Amino acid sequence: MQIDMPKVSLGIGIAVMVETAIGGGTLSLTNMIPAHAIPIVQAWCNALAFIGATLLTALHAYAGPSTGVLASPPTVEQAQKLMVVAKTAAAT
Image (cartoon, rainbow, N blue to C red; front, side):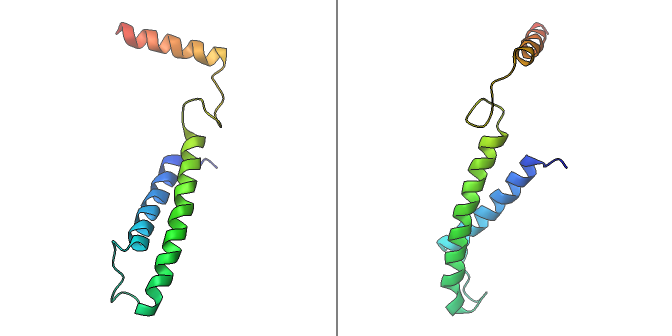
């Protein structure tokens, strides 16, 4: 099964954005849930936003096209193919 990293990243990003808004108080929970539960929900949202941001960082490092900690440099054959494509594109 192939994982669609951009869609996974988008989903986690939206979740982190909502969690950050709730945890930081930008999205008010007053009259949405009982008042005594608001601090608990905000604390959990802050924790989940931190975990989500960490996951996003790892996903972007893992799925990025450039050489880095988790991506090896291209092989000679891959580099040669890229050069042919670049020369062809420059010629047109």
